[in-house]
Image (cartoon, rainbow, N blue to C red; front, side, top):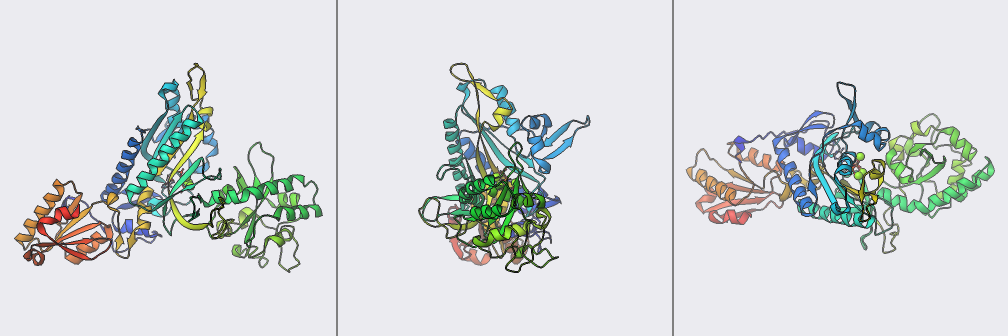
Length: 570
Ligand code: ATP
Ligand code: MG
Ligand code: MG
Ligand code: MG
């Protein structure tokens, strides 16, 4: 590629709405351009990276035996009604009507669509296992679209769906995908970690997330450096809480009458294997359809942003909401309280640094320590930041496998594999005939990778004060040739062209910067864009028969004989 025939558009300053480094750098490097909230044009420079990411994914998926197809972005509501997701999904699911007033959705994933294909195409056990995937535009009307491609509303996902005859088969298909994901993220050249994403038995899990490790990641990952225990924070907390939940449940159900006994039950309930200081307490109601209503007491501590959805995961409640004051009164025989001056809602002060031992008093409204206790509408007064900073698992806790202590690092979720079982095939009646001609439900797995999110995640892990440092495998160009004074020097023109042709012939993804920019501006552009290898062709070097090579990471210039440069670079 010659720069004059490509489109390069860099900025000195990032727009004000870009909060994190990857968003800023992608905007400055002209890789994306905002069209609306969470909606971006993928500019030519950005699209090259997306295509490289897609190609690596495609190669590894194909190698793992998955079959590529393409399912529609716009899908009829009927399919989503069959599985109940039309009602369950809430506002994140983008719904549209056609001219006849019929309902459609813009796909956030494609379980329904693929299950519809499979229920009519797959008849016999002989056709199993099978795994279909596509790389397609997704839309999720995220509550807070932000961070550029990291949490967009429109984004690209690779989603794959495996179908098996039984759970053994599903586990095999799952493992194949897990391994394929490992290869994919290795090939990207990114530092990543796979973590259990549910609290299933240690060592075996029905779901894993793949995270790119980065300080700025939204998720906390819990792992044991001396064993292979690794889980996302929600799963780690759910595991830590599972004993406490059983205790809580027992305490709650034996409570019948309001009043003093309730306090004792709460105290019993609080007699949990928690040793550290509890920073806050959240009361939540299990609003799961058909289940008996229970109030759950969640003790939380830690250092992580926690939103409502995550709280629900922590509590293990399928359908979570905060308890109302009257519900709390009904269960605990007293009003809920919070610490802080009356009249101000200062969430961070909420039950600061209280220990498990005196928490029961708190819940039950005792104020012998002289704190002001007041009715709290948890939904209103306990917004996101209140619940922040609160964790049930902290660094230094013993690992659940007993093989060491836990450490915590931050990650960006870039992939997710999931054993769905018959969740969709049951609702959609997706069956196959077994050897005896008997219909059986298909066992399904789903496997997502956030293609466009990878760009943001890769940058969060690889940048410096000059700009992006792409791993070669996903760089927009592998090599840039920067000629010095091409207009003045015949020698520079000739050697530049020779090297360019040699690299092209060797299959290297090279761009020749023939824009005639001054060296400072030219270097600054390519350092910002993050091309990993740079070759400078100048008269001074040529006099000694040499070209200058600089790695984007590392920086020291190396002088390489002209004839050896093409080989040197590969
Ligand atoms: P998150 O927890 O970040 O909201 P998710 O768990 O909702 O992600 P999945 O349903 O597991 O996402 O989708 C598979 C993959 O799609 C995710 O691992 C992530 O890489 C990507 N993804 C999900 N939401 C977005 C988004 N809004 N923008 C970009 N990529 C996304
Ligand atoms: Mg999400
Ligand atoms: Mg997630
Ligand atoms: Mg996920």
